[in-house]
Structures are given as C-alpha cells and as structure tokens.
Image 1 (cartoon, one colour):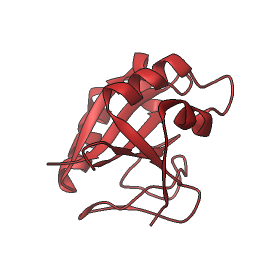
Image 2 (image 1 turned 30 degrees about the vertical axis):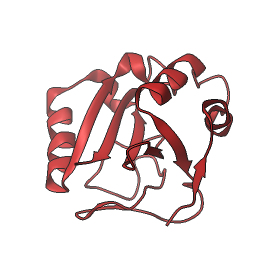
Image 3 (image 1 turned 90 degrees about the vertical axis):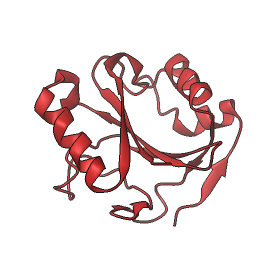
Length: 139
C-alpha cells in the first residue's frame, strides 16, 4: 500500500504543482471543500481499485486497464473523514458525452464506489482541457 503524505494545504500544493498546467486557485478550493488531509505517494508501487473498494491507483493514462477507461492524471487523497478519494483529470470526458458518464458511473456502481462529477471548470490540471471527477468509497 502507498504511503500517506500528510500536510497542510500549501505543502500539498507543493507536491502536485508540476508547472503551468496546474491551477493553484482551483486546487486549493477543492482541498478546502473536500477536507483533504493528505496525498498517497502513487509513484511508490502498483495499486488498484477492486470490487472491495479503493486500494489505490497508478497514473497510467488510459493504458493497461480496459474496464476503467477514463483515467488520466490521477492522484489518490485522504479526506478528514478517513475515506480515500481518487481524482482524475480526463481529456475525453471534456466532451461530456452522456454514454461516457453512464459507463463511468456504472463502473463505480459495480465496485461499490461513488463517482463525483466535478466538471470541466473544476479541474485544477489543465483547466478547460480536462474534466475532473472523483472516485470515492461509499459510507
């Protein structure tokens, strides 16, 4: 399992700030609204989403996992309530095709996970070019 890196909002920003495609204002707003307390080190090892919930994620773009096709620029976070949430910034979902959202939501239901559709205007990675959504453990 990945190591959890806890930190304040600025230290979390410093971890994910990879350059000019990352929007600090949108990121900080998301962290505050979702009561994020840490990020999992997703570079450490292979991790997976299973029918038993979230064990982790590896940012592999759209390669290597046919059942979860809308994953790109993924990170896994821990919320104050103890739940893990995977955030994805996907390029294809920006077109907002109904069948793509249905496929993603059904994929989550099959695994007992909730899908949160944040939207095109919320994506802190490459705003306007990616659609942000979250995969979160159910209560």
